Length: 129
Image 1: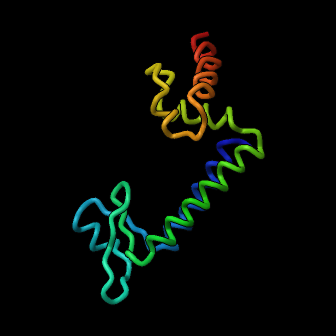
Image 2: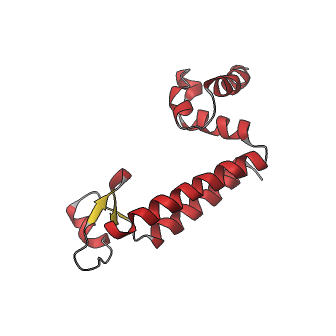
């Protein structure tokens, strides 16, 4: 198992969570009207990250499922000995090797700053060769 395969599984599971909780995304009034999901009587939409909307009755379910998914992912990373790969993935995702700044990657990871710095130091020199 690679970190990319694990991230793909995580993405597929998140898609299921979004669908199961009737979450939709809209960046204009027109998109909102086209994408909105059914509401129960008296219910309202709540805003989520990145233009997302969720029926208010699904908020707790979404939070729990998201937390469970995150726990599953981190446990899978550990079980598959992918901590270094996970750190490297986020360093690349946050362009740390271009900016020489690990802060954004560090903030997105559950590891110590020393662990992130160690992986950065290991790979930054390989990129220069």
